[in-house]
Image (tube, rainbow, N blue to C red):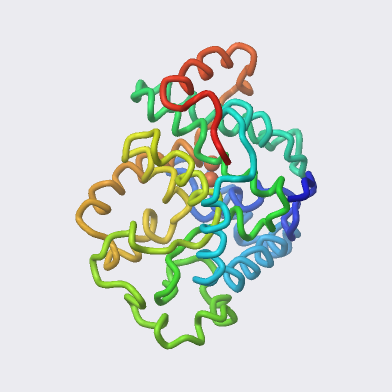
Length: 290
Ligand code: FE
Ligand code: FE
């Protein structure tokens, strides 16, 4: 695979998608008004690129595409490196984010994990904060932005209108398949999300990497953290089993740390590195096959 640090897609930076999520779900009692105002500002040039990003995502994410990517990345033959090295590698992603306001990738990871740690949560939870976005390294391997970030959703069944920009799904080839157009599609009601093929992205990839190393609560957080139509809008409950419904408490508990943790100071890498290398060593082997 060729390596490129330029993002392949309409977003100037991957953060533009997350900024858009933040506008959709502003922090309660936070700077909601500012985000509300920006959300309505359709002249904002960032909005056009975000819209185009969602269009590409909603058209490109088909059941076949997601199955192919899962099989490809499931081979784990891309690279071998430690979790900490992967954090540093992700940080080489150079995009057009604003250096004055946007965090680097590693700063987002550490800010999330440090906020979890400051609230006294268990060590696996802190580690989950650190690693949850590492699947974004796919961008460094030439995957288009729409196959790495963006809200995730089930494939092989009806697209919920609770997903952002649902109208773009009309041009998704799966929309023409009558088998995929019913509420349950190819699935049984209550079958459990583990049976469901989700759209491909950094969540699903990182879940496949972490699955033998972290507790189930952590795996739910990683796998479904961008499944906003479910954990923020309550969609797709008909595909969940009792365990999913129970475990989504953890997905919801994780989300504020991902979206709203803001440190006064950017995290100091040199100070934090020993703690995190120790924490990684508690759960992961020396190196991981990506
Ligand atoms: Fe993420
Ligand atoms: Fe994140």
